Image (cartoon, rainbow, N blue to C red; front, side):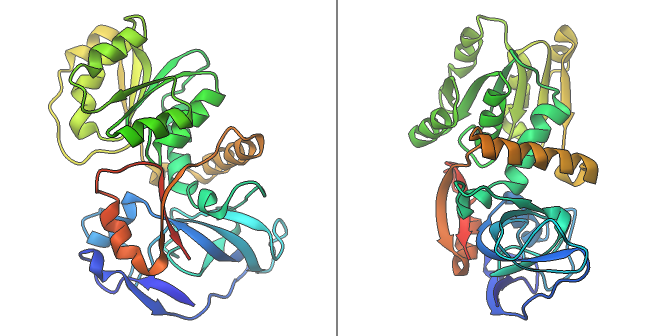
Length: 322
């Protein structure tokens, strides 16, 4: 089969398309014939060698994908050959930038017929992150207000949709006209441009001056200090992403009994992951969760895809067609 292989950490050009042996399932494992693979920033950080976790080399990147079950090992009873599935395999180094992937059955989940393979490949890291940020860390509740920074991005879109389905009022930010359109399409009731110097006042006005109960923060290194001024009493900021350090005024947390909460999917225990994916599959079947695919590129263009992750156009999910 064809797969992207990394033999040495480095720049995107270390992502090489090669022929490697087809995987064979062992007990409790499934081989999925992939039609789409999701591309996530964490894979670019790992590929660079700068991430705190490193896989053994050679390594095929990718934690998310979607396709059909090709074969299963002994003890697997929940899937049959030909079943449509999505893969969410964070924690495994068997990558999805490939025509086939070998997974533990626990990392494979049913994909409804009306959800495309590209949408299915958008679910693993992004939707799990969104669900845990909202409900696992922030404990968001019906009738609260949530601000999603980067609401047009791969994590932002499911965050908006899951929050709306749970009865929250959703505000979102984006950095381009198309991004603002995607945020509205995802379900934001109010949208604001990152580039608007008056966005903080506009966000406060949209909440009647009270502030927001929850902020899902994709770039804390740029926004965290401002976020603390936007919170309602007992508000929570969940940090999903950051690219460096930032200075904040802790007094803003004191005045409102506010909380700053970090999160990483590596910390999710298996039983919590099982609950999250049960909720995601239910939301897919109900139609309240529908990933928005921004760009699709061929598998051979993995290096270009890694560059595109950081080009400032976070408008839906970036997918490799396998």
